[in-house]
Image (tube, rainbow, N blue to C red; front, side, top):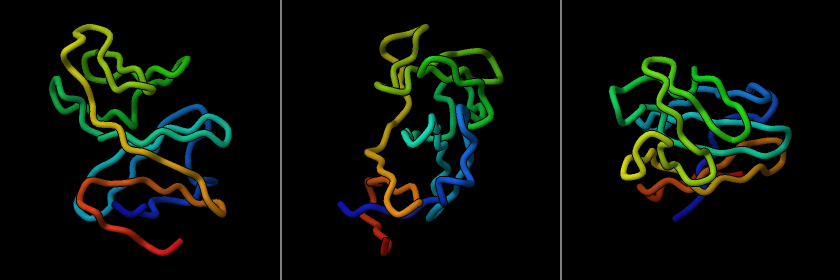
Length: 108
């Protein structure tokens, strides 16, 4: 799989989430300094916008029903069998890239 260029790092909220849509896929990019995590934007519980949730200590809280997801694993703190998809991510030349399952890639 190739890496897909998502967004300039400087456009990402520091210590928070940023919504990104690429190839019909809705993603949430969470940034802490130069570290980034990319997950699906939709909460598996009821479809809440995870990029709009509060991030504290590597955990994002869904703004709809307060379900909390560990950004390191994608696992929900309320139900270990519930998780949000995470994607391998990297910052290169000031851009956030992610390895998406559809194999799309973009130059970078």
